[in-house]
Length: 123
Image (cartoon, rainbow, N blue to C red):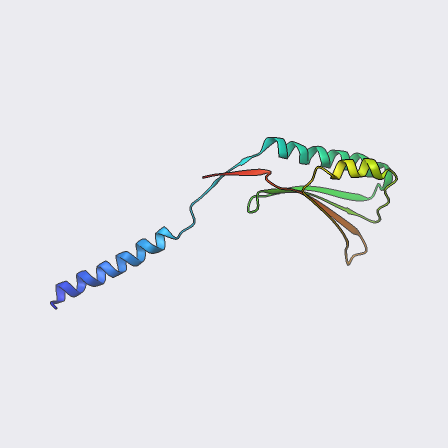
C-alpha cells in the first residue's frame, strides 16, 4: 500500500470517528410551558401560602421548574405542621402528581408537591 493510500485510509477512519461523535451529541430541545399545569401549580402554591399563613407564620414556600424532568414543584419548609382543616388541605394537594412530607436534620418539616408535565419538550 502506498503512502498516499495509507494517509487517505487514516483520514477516512478519523472522519468516520468524528462523524459518529457528532451524531451522538444530544440535540438541543426547545421547552415550552404547559400553561394549564403551570397555572395549577401556582394556584396550589398561593392556596398553600394562604392556608399556612394562618396556621404557621414562620415558613417558606418555594416554587421551582426543573427543565430536565419537565416538572414543577412547590416546596414548603416549616417549624411544625398542624392541619386544622384536613379537607381543605387535601383539596389543595390532590391536584398534584406527588406529595411527600419528611423531617429535616435542622428540626424543620419539609413537604414537596410535584406537578408533572409543567414543561413540554418540542423536538
